[in-house]
Amino acid sequence: MSDLSRRKWLSLLVSLLVCNTVHADDLSPQFHFSGFGTLGFAYNDSSRFDYVRDLSQASGVGATRRVDFGVDSLLGLQLRSIATDNLEATVQVVSRRSQNGFRPQLTWAFAKYAIGDTIDLRAGRLGFDVYPLADSRNVAYSYLGVRPPVEYFGNLIISYLDGFDAVLKYPIGSAHGKLKIFTGKAKEGVPTFDPQVVFSLKDSPLAGIHTEFQSQNWIARLGYSELRIQNEFPSFPPLLETLRSPFIGAVTPLGSGVADHLQFKNKKIRYLSAVVGYDDGPFQAQWMFSRITSQSLGFASNASAFMTLGYRVKAWTPYLTLSQTHPIDIQHVETGIALGYNILLDQLDASVKQVALSTLSRRQNISLGVRYNINASSDLKIQFDHFNSKEHLLIRNERPGWNGTGNIVSASMNFIF
Amino acid sequence: MKLMRISIQTRLQQLRLVWAIFVLPIVFIVAFQINAVAGANPLDFVIVSNLGSGIDKMSKDEVINVYMGRNRKLASGISALPIDVNHPTAEKEFFYLAMVNKELAEINSYWARLSFSGQGSPPKQVKSAEEALNLVIENKGAIVYLDRKKVDKRVRIIFDPLK
Image (cartoon, each protein chain N blue to C red):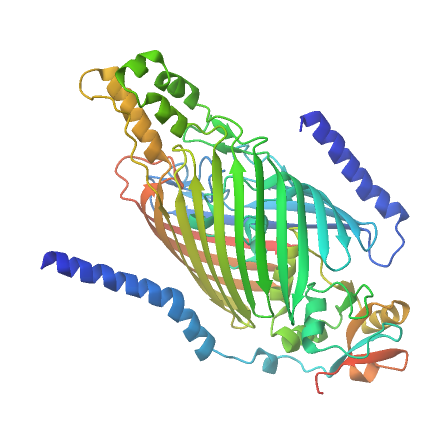
């Protein structure tokens, strides 16, 4: 969708929101303004690397700044309008640190139509609901930790899509089942290791499906999503062209095949996830597992998991989170180039192998924290993270001599209104 | 011998991880059961509905499902309008503690996740029991928790936690 057509579509949505406030006549307010926010700080006891919340952040706390108020701080504003029992529209804007600094992003902008109690249809800008919490991870007040586990959610390179989704809800005794499908196009970019260079995922199609079971205390979900990358990684075209050149073809028969394996364009990234949650009074627990498989050597496949336990005592909820990520299906690339005879060919071979290794992520983390409910709409959290990283995709600005371990102390005040 | 020691150490680490992931939560569930309801101000509440709601009775699960946004309609097919009474706050606190053993902060946290991801919105918020009662009388789908002493013939009791 072009910028012009997106602005026209957004204007139409805002008009729908405003008109509904004039003509609707039911009981509840037709114009509902709300928001959420986090004011947080993080301290890294090492200056040899930047700790970041996810891959959208080009810098973080540690090497760039030892104390950082920007890693987790954000503000979100939402406008919702209800036309009838079945029709409503919502717009949400969030300002948080990403590759565009704190420039506000349109994270949600959709119209929703409900058919009875069973089917919800939405169209517009929607959160990428690949995992539970994935489409609400900016709302820190809605979960226990200072931030969603980085080892699990940090790999997500998409937060929202422009498209459609449909949810079918049905009873299972006193419990509920849900089936959701969605399709659309990504709109974001991901900062690379060079902070000036952004890998655009714009117009990359994605689709997914998940099924969910929810009772009073249990929730279980199984989901599958797929992204097909529309654009090539910014620095790849010269490398791919070289590998496919007649000169390299004369040196090794594998060059063209390696280029095909490396390229991002038209390759798929697949997300498979399984979740179990238990919530009973003061006690809550979550287990989440995911497997991301990539058809491109340029993005390593990985498996991630985390477990969170929390127990509320009056206004305090101490919690523990264990999380980890590790590569799967590690590809050992062979260019077929005989090494040691030509420095340029050696460099080409090294570049290819470096690309295959550059997105490996292997890290284990333990988080201990406590949440204090200041009142019914705000809280304070303090969290200590200790991690051990052997492959550093989720790290920025690594300095020589770092041993792969990290200790992060974070605190945040989170609120909704 | 060194390889065998390393293998045993690796296996012990794996067992510790398995224990942490699966056994710890079970220990939490079994060992730490604190009745949070006991500390709250008691409210002898009932759930009431409009006389034309088409329902005579709701189960506890049905009330919870409506108040937590999982069911948008009453069993009669009428769109549900669950109502929260904000004053006095203690009554609202007691209702949620009694029904789902959750404090208001946890309820608001739950609704924050849903409302900021377009999945639903919390019950209608009103300032007083009198305002709630008037809403129930005027709307077929409205339900609210009320002090039993405030219930009159203009509404129907559809859930009584004492029965």
